[in-house]
Image 1 (tube, rainbow, N blue to C red):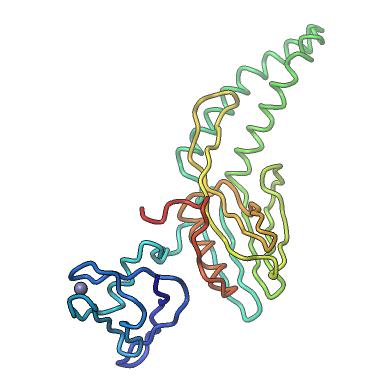
Image 2: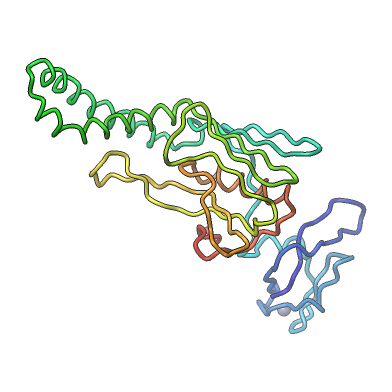
Length: 258
Ligand SMILES: [Zn+2]
């Protein structure tokens, strides 16, 4: 494993900063190229096996550990200030449309069937039956809460010298709580995949992504749940860049080779 990476665009001589571990193979014969065969000033590498000379910047792009640069997805506003980085994510734009449609139909049918029944039970005095259905009422309310949050919520992430502050407005949900993580305890950010259920007890699930942080005690905590992959990867990229954290592979993160 050779260290290397990140072109700094300046004069005729590209220079390479060593920011993360990189794997480089000779583009001609495929032999592993070690650090001593890389000329970082000229940006050229020479294979010790076949003497082929190649452009390091081109080969670095093939590094399986390197994530390609993520361009800003729809629904994100970014404000870089001198003392802080502010990212505002719109949940509606950062949720896959299939998820929104699933939630709308799920909460619509659930509540459509439920509300007339509840009214009838209350009016006709079937209170025991009403109690029996209270679980369904809670589920219906949660579905509506989830849907409303998906349509109207925004997440504001403020990254400063103190750390990362995450706030969700205007709807508070039990699955995305506001929090603050001190800068010193953040080791690494990563994005992982999980399945999100659209309707209670249903087998229909949707792929969802979580942005998490590895803390100095080696425990991982979730920062933001339920946004799409591009959004989460973009947040990871920008926050790590701002805090000067070198991106590293985390075992539970999503595959880097695809
Ligand atoms: Zn070679």
